[in-house]
Image (cartoon, rainbow, N blue to C red; front, side, top):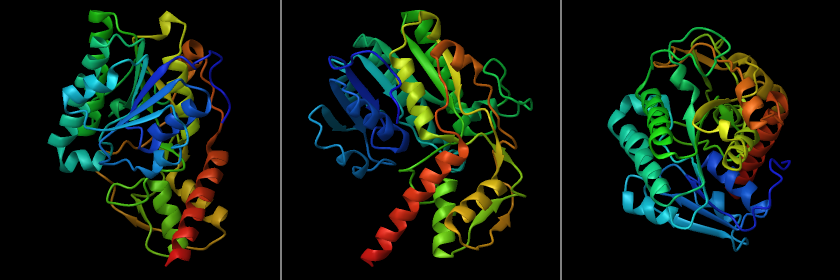
Length: 333
């Protein structure tokens, strides 16, 4: 992964909430390998895994707090002595929020306000956080531009829109330096391949390798701006360390600016694995957006964001990771 900053961060302290999760652990890895003075992780391990940070145990700068953002005192303790916060902790998944909107709200909204308040009270220098492209809802126009959103289509989308509203208020009311990121279908190594809310790419790889049923919702022609995880890391690092005051108090699309269909994704994975396996189509999923494509010009202009890995290169890396994981698991059986 290339360096996304030029500052000396050896005397700076960083907090990554959800740092044992998929995106969070990649941010932790970047900071540790690029000389951060301290990297503290806050995670309750509900959707994250210790294995995602145990691989960095040799770094003395790493500190782990097992705790829940729904508890304000935990958030306050986690923010003590911290310069920069990357807030990734959340309950993801549209279907999960539809089946349990109460818990999604408690974690994603109440937990978010706890973290904002704790960061404010500890006078952190900058606070960046994960929003979602789901906030665009029923807005039909492509590409998606930050200033034009529609009505949310799921409780998850509502929680992320609420995050953006709270962040804007804290920015204006308390003068906090806050940046939000609308992630577009981030994928990569360490995404959880198991459970009812597993991500689509590890599910596809696993199903093809094991020759078990693989399901595609609807006709599969729905499109997504698939974004390799390194690009999300870049946005977080550039935001936390931004010198440009104009960059703060805003939300940005984090994507590549290209979209591909789910059918194309499946075919590409199958070709990379060099295996034949036909998918099974099923009914469309409630709350899903039909097509997704981001305009990333705002992030380019104000954060100097430039996607480093595009879809196919990122997919090759990801498929190789999950294939290796599958073969290792199979060898142990």
